[in-house]
Image 1: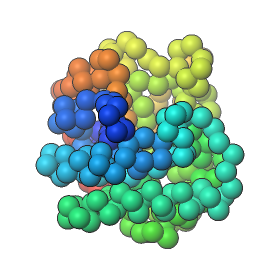
Image 2 (image 1 turned 30 degrees about the horizontal axis):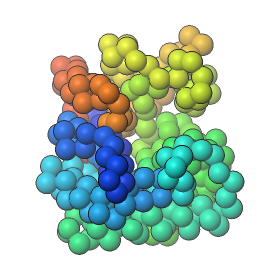
Image 3 (image 1 turned 45 degrees about the vertical axis):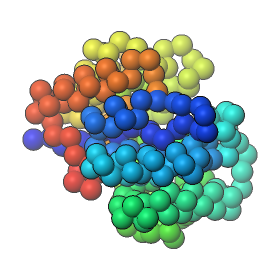
Length: 255
């Protein structure tokens, strides 16, 4: 039987601004990546989201990003390797404080947005992020883009690494995600997205935007919780996996 983690980004509201359907989406996933107040969230939202995850018995991960609230962490930034490492530690530490106060474990770290995509291709940046995680707690799992430089750096540093795939994103032939600025970057056909996920898990392959099939490893599937049809899609993908006899388990039980 196949086993996979189903993860979602959560806790992305800020002050009076509400984003996502956290209370509903969390019922259908096994892991959540909680924003750490750099690209989204704030201390009150972080505390509530950790409590929400604990109440739903869902595995918790930190979701560190660039210090860019207005751009939601999706704009590339030119930071030093020293800053990348420190930013990572700082944000993990912030979320860890809330986890410790609620007596729950911080299980993984998944970089967010532009930081995630840049680290997927830039080994030096990836290494700095992984060093930050390792020095904080070498037992924390790194969640990174399948087959990326981020996963390679994590493995070389000594972290336990999980390969992540995306249900609703198109892939380039090098295994990177198609830029959101390009047409076809986001897959809106739910049936197509679900069939792609099954192929990634069972056949270890995905069809790229150019039509070529490439190898891919799927330890965890990311589903987005902030779209118009997000909740319905998460429900459908959860149901589809179960129908295909694919167990949905947190990363600690997948790796």
